[in-house]
Length: 341
Image 1 (cartoon, rainbow, N blue to C red):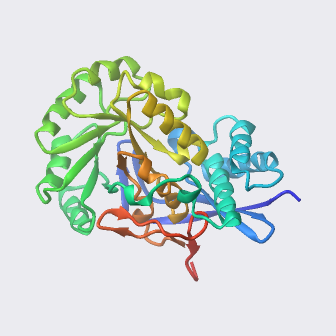
Image 2: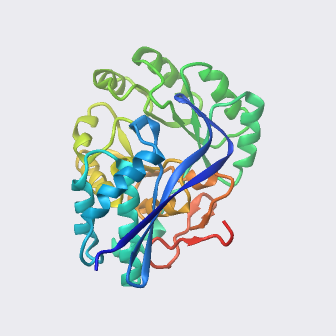
Image 3: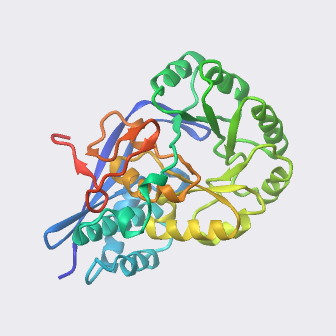
């Protein structure tokens, strides 16, 4: 009997208004899926992003097509994941939701957490960063104080007020800071910003230029005093080889890639190309974050804080202790719903 799929939209209010170079939001509309087969239910999550022409509505529409790709015994999760990837072009968030649910279901059926299915040692988990959106100086200082438990910060910067925004954060913390420009700069100004940021104790800079500016990325990589990490420039594994000329590393997100299966492929190709790896996220509940966290020990850097940015997570996942996600031994994702959420 084929598995049955149900899906629902969840409204996720944010702790703070979230401002990056592309705009501001106060909540996110994600889609939670439940994939039932026999006595087990697999959870998955889609976190659609307008940057990739996705919304909760496009996810729901895509899921109606993707569901038909699933048949047979989902313990053979690799075959199921391949079928999902091939069923529809694009629609990374919808694919991610179904792919995550397939893996959660398989882990529950086999009685093992995902990191054990993949042979990944949770003791090798890197520290995750905690993100600080663009804001006014006094609000930035308050956000930094609230982020005290997290030893690494990621600061969002836009096209304007670069030194003011970053300076407001650096003025109140000596912590390691990573910077994410979300495509806001052009090559010459990017180099000026990066040269200054290199004097401010910044570890790396993420996506300084628009994804389409391939030649600009090559020019900037040859001159940058800091490592450059591709985010919006990367969707699938086939994108990775060309990125090696313009970046030192990649930020792979399950929601862009279409789930766990393609993320693992991207990591393998990145290593073959000599690139470092960050595993990142969108604003997600503990369902989506747990899926990425089980792969966390494969990365050099982590940015898995999406569930920490929402004010009411409807799921309970894996705790963060001194900046490290502590994976449990529950089967599959190891995530449970919060009672009454």
